[in-house]
Length: 83
View 1: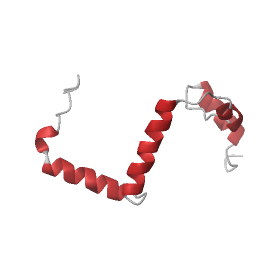
View 2: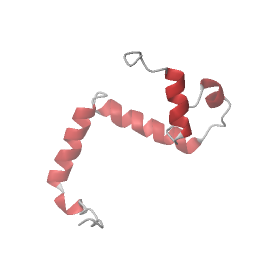
View 3: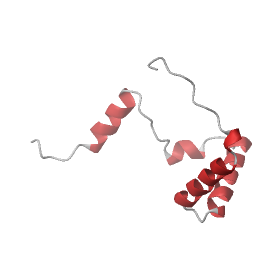
View 4: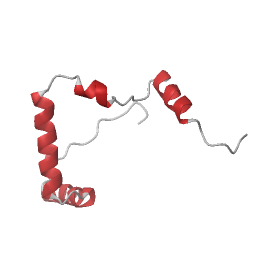
């Protein structure tokens, strides 16, 4: 019994019950009104992704290079209660 695979239906129900993310079904998505702001954000994301050949490592390398070139633009993280 301990070696049986997890029941996917039970797992997804448990995730939803404890507040985990729930993916929208295709039917729900097709009933949503278009949102120009979401469409614009997705278009910008696609353009940036294409600029770096859809390679997240290339994008990260670029962002790290910008950090090295412009350290004055970086912000220090806020102090936490722990220290």
